[in-house]
Image 1 (cartoon, one colour):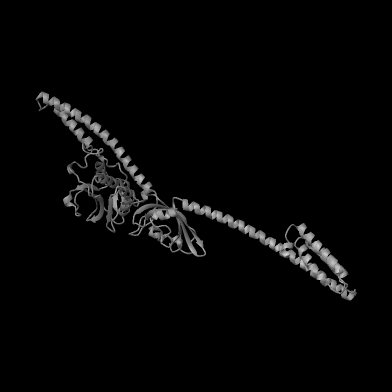
Image 2: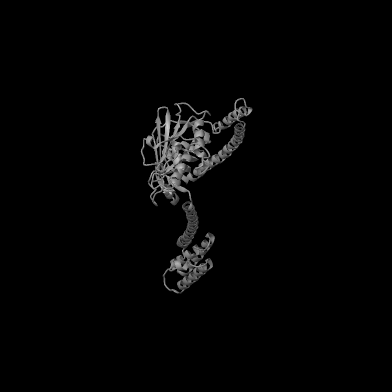
Amino acid sequence: MLARLLRGSARNVFFRAALMIAAIADVDWRVEGNIPLGFLYLIPMLLVGSVLDRWQIALVAGVCTILTEVFDNYDWYTWAAIPRDILIFAAFICAGFFTLEVVRSRQTMMKHAGRLESEMQARREAEEQLQVLIESSPAGVFTADSDGKILLANEAAHRLFGVDAESLPGRPAHEFLPSLENLPALSRGRAAFRTVMQCRGRRASGEYFLADVWFSTYQTNAGSRLAAMVVDASEDLRSREELSLNQMLAGSRILVAAVSHEIRNVAGAIAMAHANLSRSGAVEGNRDLEALGSLVEALERIASIDLRGRTGQPASVDLTALLEELRIVVEPVLSDQEIRLDLDVERGLPAVWADRQSLMQVFLNLIRNSERALEDSESRRISISARSAADRVVIRFSDTGPGVSRPEHLFKPFQNDARDTGLGLYLSRAFMRSFRGELRYEPAGLDPVPHAAGATFIVELAPVPAGEKGANGKDPDSSRGRPRAVPRESEPVARIRT
């Protein structure tokens, strides 16, 4: 009932309190006998305490005290009346002040509750927007604890790592990004660490890809945490390498075409001199014969021009890492054509002496040739094996295609039966010889891994002695412009940019 009386505006509540005071005073005046009704003024005092200030409450309490003293028919004795009135006034004013404090506390609590509700609503909206942003992001986003176990991951991360939905939490992050296994920033007490890393990623199916990882660490009451965003950069690497190969072939066509033009001019002059000799019938002491000799020498000089020195400076190259990078580049394309790629690399292969970019182009050209050869084959498989033998490192590229019909015409440019210009193998061998390597064709009978048909090409490279560096005085991968993390024997190579 009191709650109903307190409803409404301050004016209405005060009006109700005034009516109640008047009604109690009227009843107290009309009731005869020594029946004290002054305690009823406590009810209107509760009402005025909810709408008036302190001095106003004190004024109303005084009025109620006077009305109580007048209408309760108490005998007036100074020594008894004054203490009685003080007690009555104290009761009335305390009731009003109590209500005032309760109302003010309630109002303060309501304000705090409203502020908290607004903050919670704003936080919920921010969290919902952040969740939508993360879930709709094409990049894989996840968080991990100090042990490297994934706590949360978005849908893109599940697709990137090739796992079922909601199955990433609880699994170690280094299972998919091995380079995160020994990240020192996850140790307790370490300062926050923010950086970008490029490393080799691994899907649940065992397929490798090149990953760009943006990650940072932070501290919580439960320990260190890692937040990471991962993007599959294999397509960029693939496009870059394919573009490099195409540019190399295009530039080489121009170079060889210029050389071929000069050769044709010299050959035409030789043909004319030969025709003159044929018509004269005299050979000995003829000046045309001497001219023919000079032209032949010029032809030999022009034909001796090769592409050595056109490539970059040789350096020590981690062949295992390069072959894994090759796999990242070509495997998706081969999978789309239902071609199986087998990569068998001997553990502990030594570093080799080569120009990394040129060697990658040679490998890509061999894969491309095998890819074209397998277009009409029922069994589609390309095998790559790398072994160390004596003072050489041997990489064998084999396919199950129809094989090479005329091996003696390999490594010669501008063949009549070539699909393109026929420069691929010619330039690949030139590149290999520029850094003391060799590229050759191996007949099927000599292949130690027998197969029904197909072609096998052998790439031979010189190993780098322990402790020796490349001609540019740098480590193998420093020429790419990024410092590289030192991997363990079975780990991928990771590039970290801080």
